[in-house]
Length: 299
Image (cartoon, rainbow, N blue to C red):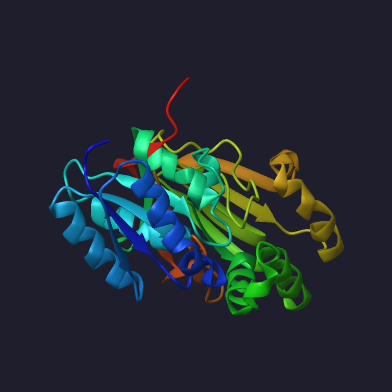
């Protein structure tokens, strides 16, 4: 690949892991005969600005961060023709890299920036903000907030920690969803329970396969509703999420739609890619083939 590379680093990602690894990543990219320009971000808006500037000059964007910043950069790149995104896992969850089969080690992942092939990828969008993975609310709102406040030393365990802490004080909520406008009874669904999620990708929370059949290139969202069970039963079912086996439970419903509107009987923050993105009620839609991303080549 002959295009120059802009390495955008979020030094704080992964509890500072991205910042520590950035010099080695830059060296590895250079070792693949790539022309590399490294810039560090201060916040998501800054990352968007850096990505827009780099893409406008024809640079490939290599993002060393977690999925939150990658989603923010993808939002910008969808508006730049022929732009190209490279994913270097630098956060705590790195679920997009997992789904795209990009090596977990960002040094090894540099080979994908050098020799990968472009692939069109869908994005999700809510209130003008794009995300790459899963937007969810309800129990997940509490779990994400707790996880984001947890000590960085917990690493990937931060998501399990957040879920367990959130479960202690959780009380059921009433959710309503409308699929693709909700013009027919089949497109409307209400339930009492834990979580409602709109999945562009199938994985979140450091490897939990919440929507195991979700695809990044089908132009649709998988809508996952987790209905009410006892806290003890919910806790017993939680390990099933890591294999995607929970979707076979009678209290889990999965729908598929290009757009969904979600509301609840009390206020909830909608989280996407680990970051707060909107408040309920919210309208979420799929953006088909919105961005091109580098993935491992070969059969």
